[in-house]
Image 1 (cartoon, rainbow, N blue to C red):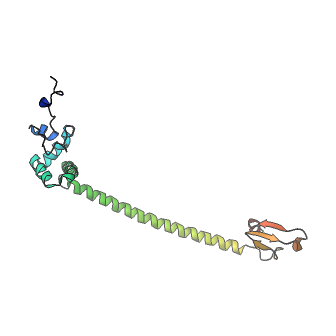
Image 2 (image 1 turned 45 degrees about the vertical axis):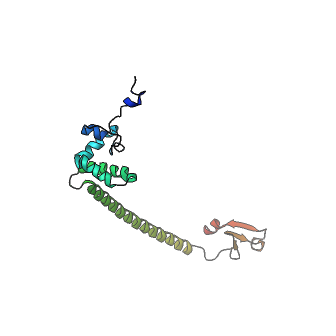
Length: 174
């Protein structure tokens, strides 16, 4: 009879922890949900750093709904401890904090440069406005002209014809 057909002969695949520890993986194996057979490397790292009995003790203390996060944290910490035995994950945190500090300094410098550029632009605009104001003609034949909605309007008494409108840009070029 086939093993899949007979429920009595059903063979359960061991989890990564039980396979590595060479023990029988029972239905109540605490490590099986968190270290499936495909995760042998993850369990090997955690086992090397913390030991299997310590991992089991830590998981027993943690609430069941938080165990998956605890296992992920243990795997991450174990990997960082193998990479950096002295600082482990604290080294990564310090590195990231330094990077954030450097970026904040760059941001402050960039903001200062933007404010400086805006000040220079305002000065230039002010200078251009002053130059334009000082170069306007003092007397023109259009002294009786009226500016309406940005256009110069001359009435027919000035030129002896119908109403004439000049755009404001023309006025500045006189």
